[in-house]
Image 1 (cartoon, one colour):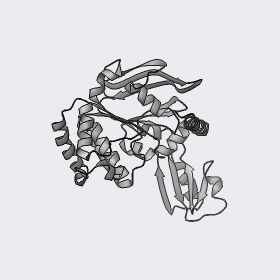
Image 2 (cartoon, helix red, strand yellow):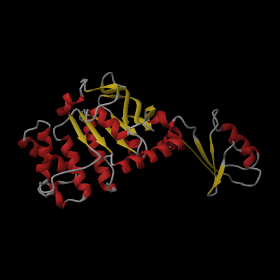
Image 3 (cartoon, rainbow, N blue to C red):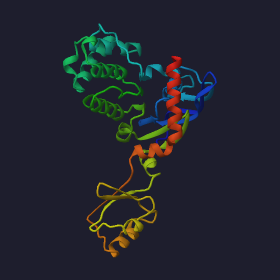
Image 4 (cartoon, rainbow, N blue to C red):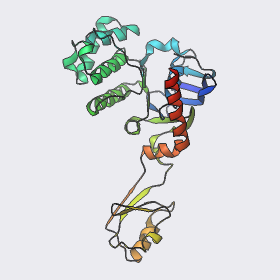
Length: 316
C-alpha cells in the first residue's frame, strides 16, 4: 500500500428512517490505485460513495477526500460518474464533454480539444460531432465517462460504470480506467460484477448489509478459500470416493475436491497406489466470485435484496 491516501473514512453511518443503510464502514483508498467497492444490490455502495464525495452527509463517522475534511472543497480535483446517467441530448459529444469539464474549472476551448483526442483514443472518433440523442446507450455512457476525466482529475469515482454496456464498450471502459490509473489518478468504483473487479482492482472492499466484510487485494480474498483440484482417474469405480477428501463431488467425468492444507501429494499418492491412476489433473485457486459468496454469505445476500426492494418501493 502506498504511504498516502486519496480517501480515508472511519465508522461511516447513514440512516434512512429506522434502517442503517451504511453501518460503520471503514475505507482507505491509496493514492494511484484502482480500488473497488463490491457488494450485492442494496448493500449500501452508492450511499457510501455519496458520503465520501460529500453529496450527502453521514449520520456518524468521519471522512477525508484528497486531504480535505469537507469533500466538496476538492470537487475540481474529482471526476464523478453517478449511477444515474444524464447528458443534454441536443449537445454534440465533444461539446457535452467540454461542458462537463467546464463545471470542474476547465476552459471550453481546452475541453473541446481534449474531448476530440479522448474520443478518438477510445474508438469513438466518428462520434465527435454527433448529437447525444443519436448515440447508442453504450456510446453515450462512454461520452459521459470521458466528460468525467477530461479535466484530468486526481480522483475518479465511478458508480456501477459497467451497467448496461455491451462487451465491446466494457473493454473500452476497462482500458480507459487503466489509462487513468497509469497517468497517476486514483480510481474508486463500485460494482456487483466480480469479473471487472478481478481484472482491474489493486485493492477492494466488500460491503454487505451496510457493513464492510473484507478489505484487501484480490489475491487476499481468493486466498481465503482452499485450492480446488479437478481430477480425472484412469480407473473410476465405487471405491474411489472413499479415498478423496470429504465433500468431493463427481461431475462430467471428473472429481472435484478441496486440496487439504498439507497439499495434494498425499491424496494423489493414495489414488495411484489404489490403482486409479491420473488421466487428468488441474489445481486452481477459486475465483473472486467464490470468495465473495463465502465472505458475504447467503443471509447477507438475501438481506441486501430485500433492502434494495424496499428502497425501490419507497422511491429513494
